[in-house]
Length: 130
Image (cartoon, rainbow, N blue to C red; front, side, top):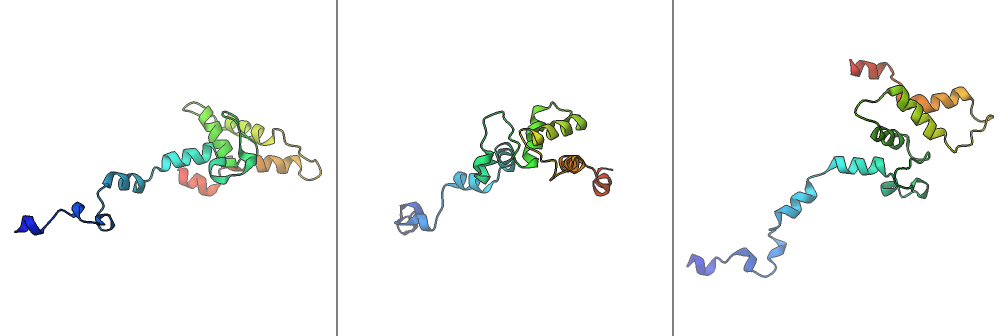
């Protein structure tokens, strides 16, 4: 009697509205892959921002990219250990490359501060590092 009246759910019409049998597809969409997303966002900011100025060839670092993207791409070019001074100077070179700095608008000291701010260690950061 049970076998006759209790039929499997997938044989009933419209069973898809109540039952879900593809757990692999659901698991794939619910388990996030933040490493891949972060690498894509930092390595190719055009993918998310859709700004034509950020479109560049492979291996090229545009100076109009966000600072964190420039620093990340320079980080990828280095080996396991990075000299902070070299990294900072490479960052400054990329940021100031092909840029017409107007002498009246920004002084050289202000330009240096603008370029060095991602690499500064303030008191809060130094407390976190110790």
